[in-house]
Amino acid sequence: KNVRLSRSDGGSHVAESKQAFSVWLNLKLRPRGITVRNVIADLADGTVLANLLEILTGDKVGKLKHGEMRIQHLANLNTVFKFLQNYVKLVDIGPQDVLDGNETRVLGLLWSIISVFSIRSANLNMPGCRHMGDLKQRLLVWAQRHAGAQGIEGVSNLGDAFADGRVLLAILHGAAPAKIPYAPLSSAQATLTKAVELAQRHFGVDPMVDPRLDGPSWPEKIAVMYLTELYLALPNLGKPHNTSGQASSQASGQAGLSKSGESLSPGRRGGGDSVASGSAARGRSPSPASPGAASSLSGAAGGGQGFDESTHRQSAS
Image (tube, rainbow, N blue to C red; front, side, top):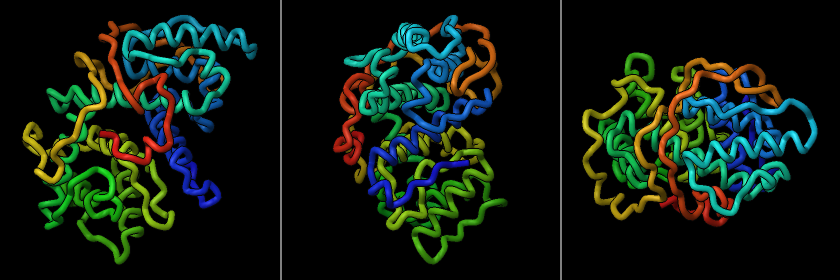
């Protein structure tokens, strides 16, 4: 059951991010039956991160310790960080930050992981997608094509342009026209609510924002996360024939956040045994596969740069 934000959260962008990251984690961890309820506290024993990385990479993190002692949890996190450094360049964050529940740094770490593996998963379907700027551009071109088919103009970004639900509904209609008609409702909030519910029902992509809040909120970082998962979930019919072209001039000038190296196995929706038992994880480790080259992220995407609420409010370009 999805966590729902309320006005008691003060419309906090950090609260929105915690909600979205929790949904993303649960989407990836679903094959192992692991549910994250507290995106900060549930990572503290290392088992959730270990399971996540094994799913994303197809490799084995290593043997973890069982138990509830801090020293055991710290040992697990040391193992996880040693493995993670094969894929993500980490700066100013360490196992102790996760163990202590440092919210800013844990959210920064999660954004690093999400960014790297979203880019690499997308690259398998959109060859040449190696930077965050590439990913945003490809998603924007994809959205513009479906929006254009419904006469929607002015789609120049992945944030505000999606807030009224029409573009998302157009994408879903393009993917499954027989099941999902393009029929916007009378209000933006109702249309967005309808669209995210249809995406969840037909394609298994859970909502990462709560469209029932007054004035639909669609921060760009969350939009990139959500649209990447939707793109990967949709059948080929939902993808444009050519995403290698440039987005319209309205979207020019976007800069990449990261360099992601060579392609890697995507975050799978299939099975896989879990790595170790813990507060939110149970099971065994999967068969190993070779890790990819480490990737570097800067700014808000950097694992150790911390999670800056003011940065999150701005474009992720």
